[in-house]
Image 1 (cartoon, rainbow, N blue to C red):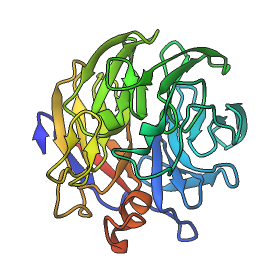
Image 2 (image 1 turned 135 degrees about the horizontal axis):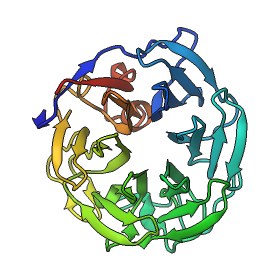
Image 3 (image 1 turned 90 degrees about the vertical axis):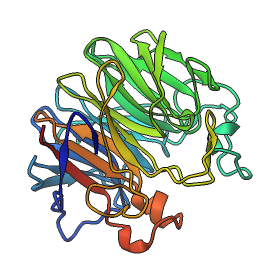
Length: 335
C-alpha cells in the first residue's frame, strides 16, 4: 500500500445465506443508513446487508438482464443500471419498482457492433457516432442538485443528464481521446462542489466536468477506471480493472507488462493519497484483486470493492475456477 491513508482488509465480511449464490458483484453502494447494497450476476438481484455484513434481504428476481451499476440516492431509493437491457430503474428500499428510464431491450443507434470481428483494443471502437440514451449504459450518480447523470459507455460514448423525474436535460461526449471524448465512460460520480467525474475506462483517465458538462481537466494517474465514489471529506475512491500483458488502451498502446487490478484514492485535486492491491502473483489473496468493478465508501470511511471475477476472470480463462468466490472485500480505514 502506498499513500498517506491506510486500510486493512476485513476477510469474509459478506455472510451470504447458503441458499444464494452470485458469480459477480457488478455494483456496490452504501445507503444513508450505512446499509450495503450489492447488484449481482448469476442470480441477477440486489442483496442488502448491515454494515457488519449481516444479510438482511434480497430482491429483483426476473427484472435484470445484465446488472452493471448500483447507486443509492440520499433519500434511500436505489438506482440499478442494466447495460444489457439499456435501462436505469429506480426502486424503493423494499425492491418496489418506482421508475424506469430508457426503453427495455431497445438500444439507440451508434453503429456499435458487439462481437463483430476481433477488436484492436476493445469493442467500443465500433461506436461510430454519439446518440441519445441508452446503448449499454453503465453507471449513475445523483448530483447535489438532485439531477441524475448516467454514463452510457458500452455501446455509446456519452454522459446524459436527467431531472429527478427522468426528463432528459442534456447529453455530452463523442468518440475519441480528446477532452470531452470517450472510449467507454464506465464509472461516474458527482461531488459536493459541483463536479462530475467520469471514469473513461479504455482511455485510462478520469475526466472532470462541471454540472453543465463543460470539460475542466483530466486525471491520468489511473488505469481502466471502472467505478468512482466520493466520501464526506471529498476523497475520491476508484476501482481499476486489470489490464493483462499484451492488451492495449486507446491512449497508451499495448502494455508489455501485466497491470493488475487495484484501488486508488485521490484527494479532491486529483493527487494520490492511497493505492493498494496491485499484485501479479497473489491476485486471489485478501487485499488483492482480480477484476475490481465497483466501489463504495461508508460514513466511517470504510471501503467496499465488488469484483466481476466470474465473467472477467474465470469465464475468460484468466484465473482458475478456485478464485471464483473472490468477489467482494471490505477495507477498514486505519489512519
